[in-house]
Length: 230
Image (cartoon, rainbow, N blue to C red; front, side, top):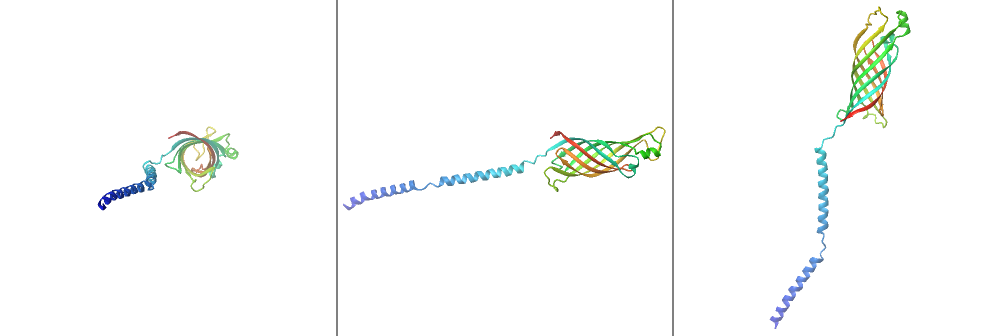
């Protein structure tokens, strides 16, 4: 009888234990899904961050360049010996500039200037001249250096300007007359240095131009137009 009871009870106990274990497995909170999602999300963020940093390292910074045409004019005031034979006058200028983020803060340009100086009345009276005029056509290289990193302003950009130019000088005066040291035509090299500032599309500058026996101070302004961008 005892043997029969054990045979009946033992399977029943095993069945109860199996059911209890199965129910505990079913009722156990499933945290693995949320953990898995969090891990996947973190891994995705790490992958995106790594991809962005890798792209920044692999893709070089783009260089933006442009050509500008500048047209304007200004006044030239003769200095020292030159002031004896020439009055202040207005002139014209043109410049083709190359600007690029690759060479900033430098701006390189080729410039052409033309000034026609009338002579003082005293000079003509002393030399018994009816007319005397000095015409100077200049062309050369101009370099501007921006000071925007030093002077941080919202509307203007100050700069230093230097140039070297070849000057073709022509003098017009009465026929059959000649003056020592004042030939009808000659060529000279000049060097200029000064300061200026940019206001939107306008450039203003003051420059001292050294040229043997023909030095002068110029105050000029010009408007810049974009020609091509690449």
